[in-house]
Length: 173
Image 1 (cartoon, rainbow, N blue to C red):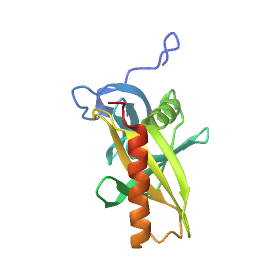
Image 2 (cartoon, rainbow, N blue to C red):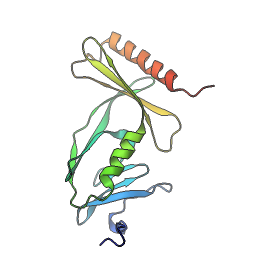
Image 3 (cartoon, helix red, strand yellow):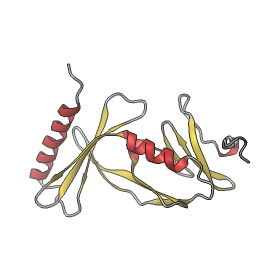
Image 4 (cartoon, helix red, strand yellow):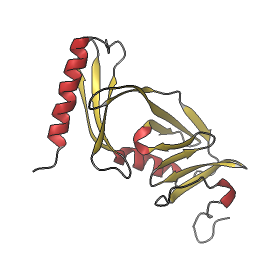
């Protein structure tokens, strides 16, 4: 029950094992014994654990369902990771409260830099994201479908694009 427009506190039985500096921002029950919990560090999914905000590629709210597409690391290269979409997870939220807004805000806020570059064929998106508790940006790329991701010229050009993005976002000396 809401009192004065405030949402009830997250029941202890639904509370995930938070880190000492982690705090709950919003939550929504998905069953009687499971909840989605948004914290300053990420989104806790039942039976999966926490996804950091930087680990969520997309999130969409339909008005009843929250659909989350996690990013999965396909390969780690010198200065960046190559990401692909993990299978989407969808949750029916009958009382969503602030959760969809917090997810949208936090995922968006984690993106510090993004740009798309056409390649022949395909293309690549270079992304610099903020990671809670870590200084600097975490760099990743996501290739368009049909891009020859293992071709040496594509790997070399991608490295140049990431280094240029890193230099463009580096703090002044």
